[in-house]
Length: 202
Image (cartoon, rainbow, N blue to C red; front, side, top):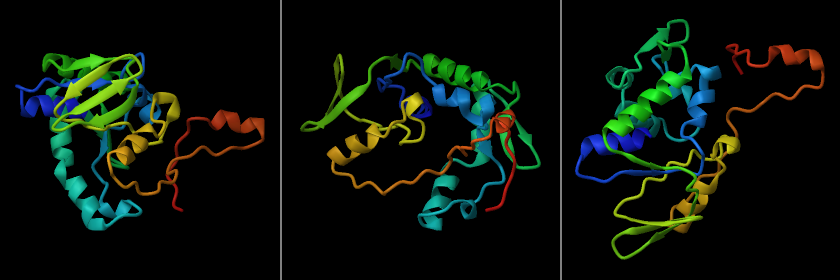
């Protein structure tokens, strides 16, 4: 959604369409941060990331500084507040729904079209355009942004399909490994700890 919003803001003459296979947008937003949606983090630096070159990570972090992220969410009606101990920024409303609603409202204000239940099946480059096929329709477009969420949360639609589309268009894929995984324990009394987060050093 953010990509669609920034694209529409940058060039209002473009017709911007989001295709999503889900019934509703934003499932991952609603579950992030334990349902509170930690939008960004003021304390994060390139040294906090593993893998890849530090310069590449620095460039990504500098492309949209935290101050600009805060300003963006303020503009769209979801002001953020910082939890100083760890630098995490959450919506003032303390609910992920506030972030999702603000993004949806801004997309609507900008005229971004949203087509739900349109799971992409193939992306075919033509001479100077792209043909995006879903299970029920086909769309012709001048540009495609692939924002499928990797293989992070299959229940929300991030099931790795995007890697196949990227490969089919000639891109190489860096092997991935899980970064955030559940800890499976046998004893039932651990169920009471479900959802509890605690800082650790590994």
